[in-house]
Image 1 (cartoon, rainbow, N blue to C red):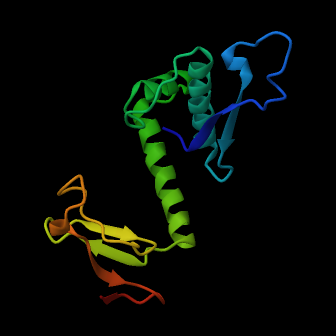
Image 2: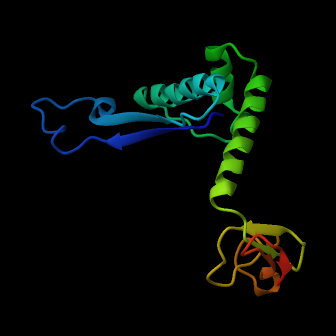
Length: 161
């Protein structure tokens, strides 16, 4: 639900050469990375979120997300932080919008591809290097649904390809 990262990294070879074997949880490094530009409430929720992952891993029951904000991890976050689940979902949306706008400033959308079958648009920062097809119309490559480049923006202006 939060915008952070929990990493489970195997310990270096020098750490694992001890005389007595350590439990699996102790033979790995548990790192949590937090985006310092987040709102303070977001940082609090992110730390809780990542500590839930860490705790699950140490206990030997790692959970994966089915859908951020709509799974059992979100309920655990709400219990730990005291915020309502809906408030946490709103916070997630706000942070996602903020991060997406920052990402678009750094790498703007320059190409828009469109499916000839369903009309779905695929905005891209880089051109596709080979032919690709619409994943909504067919899960494997299908030339009938090969995406067409509909517009490009190189210098900030938009024109049809």
